[in-house]
Image (cartoon, rainbow, N blue to C red):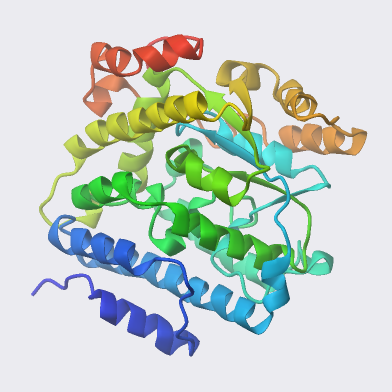
Length: 389
């Protein structure tokens, strides 16, 4: 008999039992979890491995949320500390946001959200042991295991356990996150998420950052493509946020996004459901929604500090791109920060993990359909054509 995903009540009970905590905080989370679990049970057709993976992801996020809220309840002064002018990198998936975040994070004055602390936030890390924290080894092992299981994923998205990560790790603890969409076949969750109020996710996001910065402070540099879908909630939560928008040819970003999903989470997670035809339309829809939200937001909110950066410029001269970001927001790239970024590039040469090969044909999409969907975006943002993938 096939085992299905545990109920919401069961998943929550497991997290409560494991942590000994029960307070989830004042911001909405259960509604998103209920939709997510219902979709997983009804639509994802998960096999035993898929069920285990899904439940482990949910469990980690519930447990960490419980820990963050408990820490704030016991240390209320933490919630009074401001999160000052975070630098937030956004853009469609596959626009170079990962390497840009990594370069910005090498600046000694900056503070990135690290993979190992995003889902293991309590007790908050300390500056003195930030690079030797015992949690790092666990997450290095987790990510090494992941890449050992799916070696080709390294060439597509390299995110080591001791490096920076996306904000979806925190937003997902409110179960309002784009991250779930690329994992499983969840049509009803996609529909719900695109119409959901994302404010509670950013409220929790802020509380998590307050906990993490309490003993390891620094100027936050953050990133997530999904922020494009929550720009209003983002700037309502962080009114002084500085936003860098990356732009890239959709003829590249769309099939590359599809390739990421099909590589990271193939049909081995399902019983009889073939998800091959799901990912192309999904990422056409999601990336289209992202750029539509961006256009609408910019039309309404000309007061927000935004800088545009094209992928082709970032790829041609990453250091110049980082320097331009500092200048745009009224600062300078320090000598120490530039040296650190240069060293990072030397230590992580492009293509070291192999070449990511993908195509529109493999994604089941046509050039005409992509060009038509993103015509306004490409025109309004002077997107540089890179050729058909």
